[in-house]
Image 1: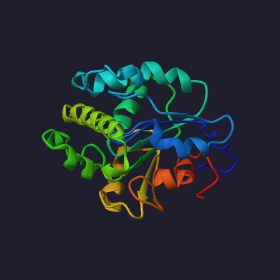
Image 2: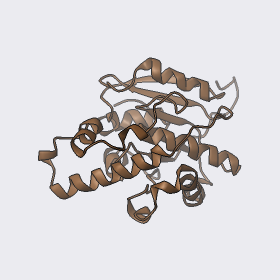
Image 3: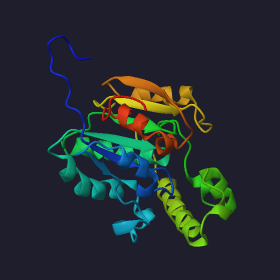
Length: 239
């Protein structure tokens, strides 16, 4: 809490996002449209996407976040920024933030999470390795495959399987709680994780914790992008 007479914390002007398994920058098109002038949304390429199309998921999360830090930290070094991880992306957000602290690089003003328990309590991804395409698609919670071009469905499944292989090799290592505060967003129609699950994130910060109920489901930020921006301190409040 800001004390009397203390200056308010600078408002973040960049939001670094790690999407759920199989997702990419397109998942955050609505968020990008709601950004204030001068603000930036950064969705780093993950294995199977863009410049990391050839990154082998078996190289592991540590290698990935090291490469991501090389790429992203310079883009946010001179301004306040926020970090968002959703579902599978919460795992990457945690390890990316650890890498930021290891480098003594400027830390985010806040870590926003949704859609998954903290990695010390969440299940592993190895269980999904043998699942068939239809079962994976149903678990992803995406649109009816019949509503999508076949090429797009294949692309999403390829990305999803790359994320699963990356997550299957991940093992959480206990560490110090983050100095950055954590805001956990819970969609009112979310079925995969409960408020009790999300409250466990408070054990991962010494900077303060807040649970925010938002309208929508696992992908609340697609229909309510301003709710995410508000949680990150980048807008005045929910739409």
